[in-house]
Length: 336
Image (spheres, rainbow, N blue to C red):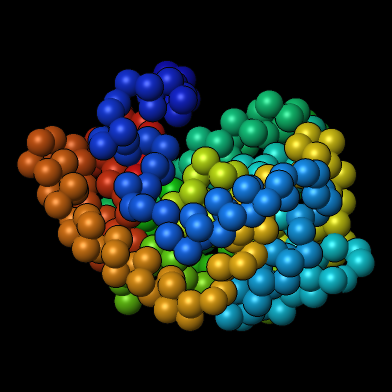
């Protein structure tokens, strides 16, 4: 059997111009001017020192407000043990999760997948198993999911510990349906698995298929760890600000590797975001509108014209991604 080559995002990024970077999720939209002004003022005021590993309380409080407003989940930002951490991007959260829960274990990912979901586990002593999504609409085969989880759960080497679900999906833009999420939730409960939910692109859903947080489904709060980021929605990927939340029994232990690996997320940038994050109730709706206006689908029309191996997102998808039709191409390379 021919072994697939795992994509190297960093190497690929160096080969393309910034204006054509479909690899790394590099936003072409400008930073919000109010956020830029707040950061400049705070840095100039020398508020540039260490903060707590779990993040500044001012930012955690407004992030809790955001989660309540957009995900329908109540978080206590002042709680002890912790239900919410600020992390160095969603990647920092994923690293903390892998270090805490997935050493010598495995997690299931859905293909096409985001390469870091596999790379992080490999580097930290775990491994991943791949379940391909099916057909042109990338649908979940629930029976296959259940069979794979049953097969992997009790094996001696790298037993299955978690399912990683990225929705909207990086790299394809697919939004998992309510029925698919309910099926994944049922399988996680049946086999006592953690669910790691990557929701970085939640605010780029522009079709009729809504984004649903799997942590909000019955029986899932106590087994789901949700990671998210401000890199895409606020066009600040270089700031390295993200967050992770869930039941305190799952999330609070993540602060140990968060502290050891990173000490803290950038303090002045946390302060700036805390001032701005929730002041404009239309901000995320405007993000979607600006995104559609700036892209207009033209990038994907050009891709389709240039190379028939590429496809625009399916009707139930976000508009942020293109992906290859040719199964011989590594789907996980394409990210917009």
